Image (cartoon, rainbow, N blue to C red; front, side):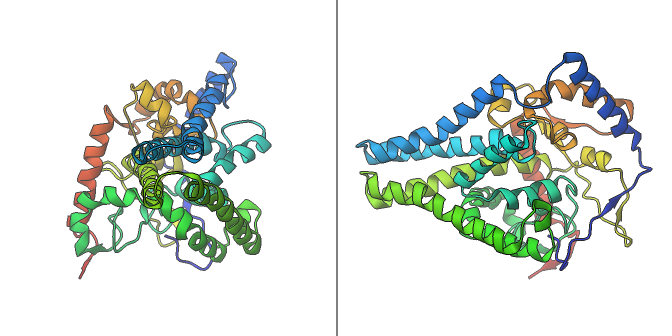
Length: 373
C-alpha cells in the first residue's frame, strides 16, 4: 500500500492508444442515446435491492423473534451471509460508485447500507474508487493487491516469504475473514492511514469527524447485529457466536472469490510507475490488461454478484449501473478487438478460480522478488 506521508497521484501516459477509450466512450454514449434509457438503476434494480435486503434482514428478524432450534439458527445465519454478500455486491457497490441513481442524495443514502454490513462507506470509497479503480494492480497504490504481506502475496513486485508457497491452499480461508476485519480493526487502521495520505479530503472529511463516524457506526452495528441475537435468540450463546462468525465468513469468502479472480490472474501485467511517477500506459488500456471477466452467459450468477463478472465493463464505466454491463460488453469487446487491445474473459467462473489459484501458486513459489525467511 502507499506508505508516503501524503498521497502522490500517478500520471498515465497520454500517447499509448488513448484513442481507444475516446472511441469507446462515444459508442457507449450513443448506445444510451439510441435506446433512450438511463445509465442508472431501473425497476429491476429496485426489485433486486428489495430481494437482497430481504435475504439479509429477514433471517435476522426470524433469529431474534422465533423460538427456533440451534440448527435452524445456524441455517438462518448462513442465509444471512449469502444475503450480506449480495447486498454488498449488488446494491451498496453501485451506490458508492454513484451509479445507482442520478440523484447524489439517493446514492449517499443507499451507500450507507455498508454500515449494517460492518463497514464504513468513506473508507470503502477511498480504497475502492480512489485507489483500486484508478491504480488497478499498481503496487504501493492499489490496496486490493496489498494484503498482510506475511500472509498473502498478490503482486510479483512485493517480497516473497516462505509461507507464501502454500498460499494457493490457505488464501481462500483468509478471504473468509475479510468482513470481520472491517468491524474489528481495518476501518480504524484505514482512517489513520488515509489521514496521513491526505485522502480524507476526497470525502469531505476531517480525521476527527471520520473517526467519530466510524465509532458511532460500529456501536449501531454491534447493538443490532451482535447484541440483539445474544439477548433474544433462544439458541445457546455459543451457537449464536458460531452463527455470527459463520455469517461473516461466508460473506468474506464470497466477496473474495468474486473480486480476486478479476485481477490476480496470469494475464495481469502489474504496471510499475517510472522514476518520474508516470505509468507507461493509457489508463483505460491498463484496465484492459489488468482486469478479467468470467461467466458472462450465466444470468443468475450475474444477477447475484451485481454484474461484477463483467469487471472489464465495470472498471471502464464504474459510474454506470451494473444492469447495463451485459449489453455494453458487446460494444467494449468489439472496440477492443478493433484497436487490438486485450479483452480477457473466462467462459466459466470455475475457470477463473482455477487460473486465480494457479496465479497464487506462481506468486508464492517464484522469486520475482527476494524470498525472506
